[in-house]
Image 1 (cartoon, rainbow over the protein chains, first blue to last red):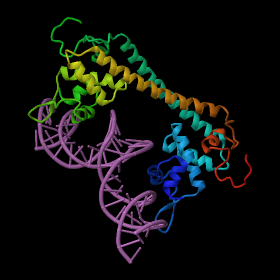
Image 2 (image 1 turned 45 degrees about the vertical axis):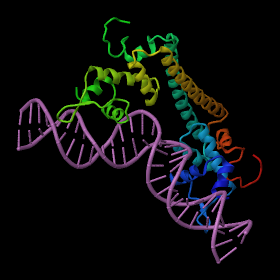
Image 3 (image 1 turned 135 degrees about the horizontal axis):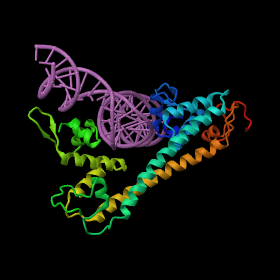
Image 4 (image 1 turned 90 degrees about the horizontal axis):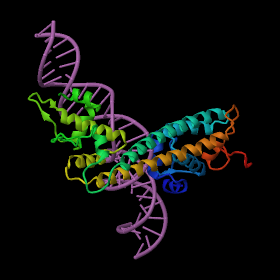
Length: 141
Length: 141
DNA sequence: CTTGACCTTCCCATAATGGGAATCCCCATC
DNA sequence: GATGGGGATTCCCATTATGGGAAGGTCAAG
């Protein structure tokens, strides 16, 4: 299989396949005499593994660890589980951060008239106190 | 104020203040004869605005829009609200994605013994079917 | 005049992905 | 045999926001 076919079969772009090889996530692919990379079903299987791991948000270094465990017949599943749960923690922490931002902003937006008037609690919050940048006239708005 | 003091006062690093200026988020700062950038309280106020907006996950282009609205005495709060809610949608979508990944992985991990044995549903899921990479013997697991 | 803290600009690095150029390989067709 | 087109190769660049670090200029205190 040439790289394009392997890409098609695995769902990983040819660009990314080369990249994964370049950064050492994949071993150097076999080459034809022409210089073209040559892939077999086993390679595609690995690529699919990588793609699924990416879909679950694992970083390339983490996937490197998972691949090593996958290829280790004597692995302990505890190790895999540890990696997975550590990643879950990270994902959940990030999700919480984003949700907190969204909630804050949604709360601010709920108090914004959203009409033609300039008064806006969103901007006031961002500005720190209830002043509108130049604060030329000193009334508290 | 020199840049270090403005950084201290605003919570934005000197590096980032220069960067914001370089990418056009901030106008070119006033300069002393020495070439040092010179900041006043108003500048720090803007920097704080930027920092708060960053803390709410706004991108620099989005913050550019917010700053423009902030400085526009005749803005309609509807416009601010629109920007904010669009951003909220994006944040929530991303949070959902991460939560879904976390849930999937947590589910897989829950079915993993997590002991010394190599059998691991997490790896099996990543591998696509229940085979362990080499599949030398052809029994379906 | 030296020392030290601060500033300047410029380059590099990050994570993962893609765009695009210049060049080459391979196969089919004229 | 020449040619054309699709795919492959490598290499460079861009993204986003942030920081590290080098080489050199400024300023205040000693």
